[in-house]
Amino acid sequence: MNDDRPVLLQTRGACLHLTLNRPRALNALSHTMVRLIDEALDRAEQDEAITSVLLSGAGDRGLCAGGDIRALHDDARASGRASLEFWRDEYRLNARITRFPKPYVALMDGIVMGGGVGVSAHAGNRVVTERSRVAMPETAIGFVPDVGGTRLLAAAPGELGTHLALTGRSIGAADAVLCGLADHHVPARLLPALTEAIAEPAEPGESVEGIVERFATEPPAGHLPLQRDWIDDCYAADTVEEILHRLRTSGVPAARTAADELLTKSPLALKVTLAAVRRAARLDSLEAVLDQEFRVSSRAYEQPDFVEGVRARIIDKDNDPQWKPGSLAEVDDEHVARFFAPLGPGEQELGLASQLPPTPAPGPSPREAQAD
Image (tube, rainbow, N blue to C red; front, side, top):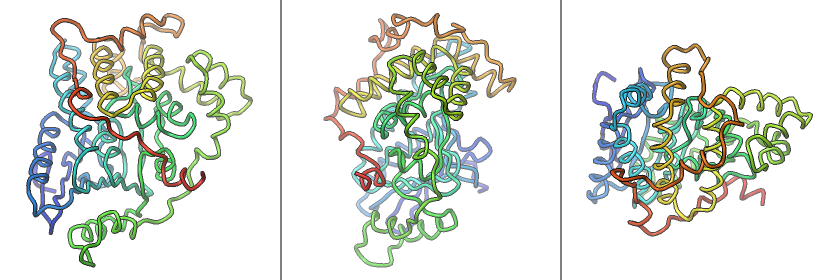
């Protein structure tokens, strides 16, 4: 696309089509983009002629690789506060998407990570393709899953969400559906036809949900169902140290590989992430989880691991982050608890849960429901 606007809006029939338009940056979200999406939802909600919203990403590499990590890194390095305002608006948008009163379809084609999950996986109609790679990879950069991701992962079957949260691994279409991060698989080659069908339904009165289901097919087989036994056993432990012990001693090569992966992550981020996912499972709404995540993000932003993780993984790409603290043993319960404490004087809480009634808990994925 030649248009350099970061979010493109096109009304097609009764559908407002939003396109994230930073393909060279894998459509990474900026604060401006978050505001533009929110304004577009205002328009769609108020315009009776618009009956649905469709979200996609420009280019063929992915919907969205997350927030603009370099901008967040630079702000944190300069001890700025712009990142907190970005997260404040981003998390409010995530909550709004869940409650949006008209059908909202997210085409989760290609790479969908971090903030990309936030603008898609809370939608009512989530479509993945054979090219989809969905992940919350924050522990690799010294950060913690956010954008409501801890709620989504906490609701995944068994301990799959804990495994994905700690390792940051990406998953394909079938596993995304299994974990409740997506609803349907549609082959990538059919996305243009699906988009057209949503804009101009072939049959009067056909629902958006019905149209998506009409295009849906069985995805290529996933990997997680074959790994459920060792994942559920190892990640059910109460501490990261015990999880590592179980992974190393399980006798399963894939489990030992996962243990090796965890040892490359920020020890502080691992412990806070485990606590965040477990706490999210006990909260009664997405808004309450987002309030918790805002506290955690505000604290993680202040830690040296975030700047160092982005430097090592994204900027210098030496993949040799020097974490502080450098070991799990140096991260105690009191250190972790500070991430969840109320924000201090001069810091404004997100406060979403106090403004809205609870949202329903994420239900089982269609595949998990069929298994039951």
